[in-house]
Length: 350
Image 1 (spheres, rainbow, N blue to C red):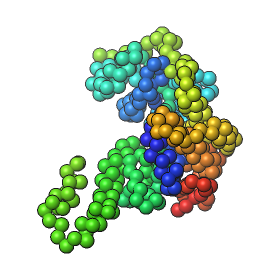
Image 2: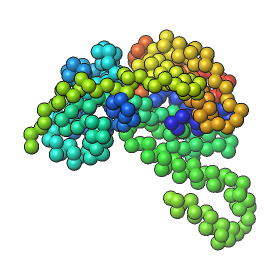
Image 3: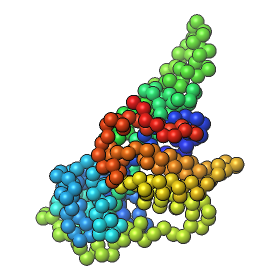
């Protein structure tokens, strides 16, 4: 899913994809140069962590009455808005109001990971920014993983089952992996030529029963913030990427930058149209040889175009999809799923 291969391959094969404009962003990913996009759990804010801009002001109350406990999409938009307003690449997550021992015991992995990058979450302000997290859309399926293409099944984040709506709740992804994964597997087994041949046999015998059963077997006082350290922290994004060393890497970085800038958390029609135009000019051909990097780049490019087109077609704001030029719901026209198939325009269906 990280490179969109399953969705892109299904699209190229003729399957319908749905709800691609709904991409969820986690509000608080670690933003330190050289660090991965490690997610700092929303449970931190649930336990009292607050968000501050680079001027060390709490800002969430300006965007939602629930402050730091606002819905995930609201928090992500607020952070990006503050980053734009203050012309910075991050905000701070401040957990210093809770006892240090409690924080270390309650969040041992987050504490240890941040320690590895020179940050003590019990005394430091941690630079964070949103990061792409989960795709609600994907290959359109029914409740048994069947796509619109006979014989093709999808499950997990590659699939668009419809169970998440426009803004997935945390941990509901387990439903797609465990429940729909098992249902799709069972449906594939029942629909396979071998299964049909067995069904035509009056008595499958003990070996057949064993094969049928196999699927089920897979089965102190709070520390004061150390403000002096924060002037030295720069986000990996602020530092900028290393110069690409080959055409594939260069094109990949161009797509990433374009998608974050124009098809990210805050969208509008003008920038979406510009993004589609720029993506079209890349004209990345499907490689004749099955080279992994080249194939992944083509799949990323294909999916980026489809996400941008879907976002431009949905002229409203709903869940994780926010249009500044259409900031409200439009149930009359868009309380529907977006659908796209190869060679066809975006359409909306109940």
